[in-house]
Length: 314
Length: 232
Image (cartoon, rainbow over all chains, first blue to last red):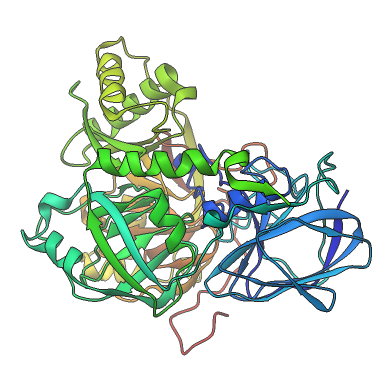
């Protein structure tokens, strides 16, 4: 059973799984991993279900010291992974022994996921182990990791057995330029007639105002002239237009209700890419029908949930 | 009522639109839709989230096509209704003073005395239209028209837990300390969010709420206005 101590927590590291479903009516955000693709791939490498609880590291990852053996994998924005003093590859299973130190000192994008065979064992809160940093629940006492935290994974038969790596075509690449497929949003008809073509034609830039809740973009504003939107539930990927006219794309830890008009909604594949976006990255939008977006997501996701489609035995 | 119009929200979500304005008939119909969806389709949906005039539904698009779910919801609209059994929750409040720093401004803006604001805030039985913003934060409808007051022009950096506020036509209660722009007129010691409890959130959409004067005083907890830099 893997056990480890957090020697350095990194910039913002928290326990995340697929999120807390079914409690938005009580004000609990879904949350969970912002980049679900990397979460799934990291879990496959250590023999977990795709949605097991991992560490989500942001920009600069943690330094961990293991006290019991186990199997780990790091997947995300081309992370640098250091085992003891030597660099090791991300995107593959790594066996760790007592006394080993694993570090993720840097990465090319926003996030990397560290999976542990068996999945991290923290208490379930409303059906999920993910950390809700706003409500202060889930994960480790509802907060991000601190120096000295002790964590462990659930015992797993797959530990120490796998030597898997991701299939080359699936290894994440950080591009800093995203092309996002989106469908018409619920209030699209209330925008000026040219709004959709403005959104499609312009090059938007990720502003520093981005976190697990959403990403504010800079670029040509679009204006809304429809009816006032009364607070309503809102999907991840919704492209909100606040009064300033510059878009905000909602991510996993969005508020459960909101009253900004939504011109479009980004699909799950684009959402995972946005989870790796850094300030300064460039974003373009392309509208498709809802059916086309669903088809795109279905093809993309069918492969990601199938471990055999994702990993090669070494 | 009875026309439940479905519109797509995203690739795995839709809205059931119930009305145009958040009047009582509409917000109560919203709760009827929520109950019907939970009872009729509960385990086959991921989330059912009431708003003011709509119900937002998340589903697995591998299980449901939009048209298929719309048809299932239309069938529920024709089914007999389960009568609502709303709970009544009583909330004791210390008004004004250090607990309600905006009571004077709410009074002045509406040409009332502070006593009159409190009397009018105590009078109605409110309804929880929905929960949002933070876990357990109730958006209550039924506010006296004379108390309607816009949000603060600049939100505070910290509003203490239990603060009772007004924003436009709504009144509500902060379950945890958080930033916020509502006009705070009082505070309750009642806990709306208890993470360690089996039922961590006290209020649910559709509940009725009455405020009563608090029989006991509450400790003072600081408000933080917007200031230069920092988070503390």
